Image 1 (spheres, rainbow, N blue to C red):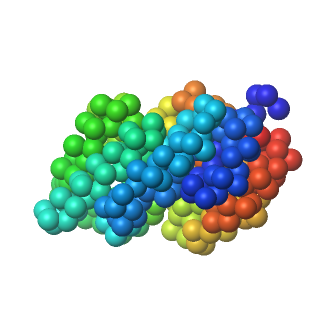
Image 2 (tube, rainbow, N blue to C red):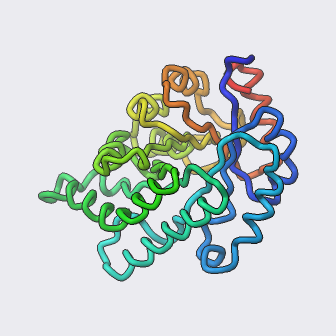
Length: 272
């Protein structure tokens, strides 16, 4: 048991209250998910940060947030929209700094359409990376300054390597890779992407964060671990070969099933 990886959780401040003892028991990594809505970022979020920090008194695990993502991508062509996205990313990092957070999740810009069409247009791959740089350069510098990693999470990604190329293009330790198991399983089952362990192997030492959720390969279910048909043995076997110590964050719809997710992985001898 001591050698098994320790699972963390994606929670909001309310569910952190419920699972606080479980989080402190093994000093589990935490991702707070209260800070992605624009309404929150544009408002007074400091009391929520203060409440979280009070609940985390005695917690020594790593802490981060899910960054803003709804309604935009990180590669906008429209210059006015780009300014809004730049603002949102910096707002998220401001929260991270106040919280003492060291990771912020950013969504991949690569769609299923991209997979079939980027090579249909001359220079399209380089242009996509250029647009991401125009949007993210200030956020990357800010992340470097505050010791935070921007981890790029697969969404529709069919090619495990495209966003690795994107992350590498920044030449910064502040830009790394995240894998969402349910998203990868959806892409595998519905669009012909490789299985999840291939995504892990592709990321290698650049993998610093994972969202662990179970699914059926058809939709983005966010079921408790053990409720879908993901081959968890293959996933954890691949994780076990890494030396990058990725945060293993259970991200499920029903936060009440966080303990059950841990128990199911413990029963398989995969995690604790």
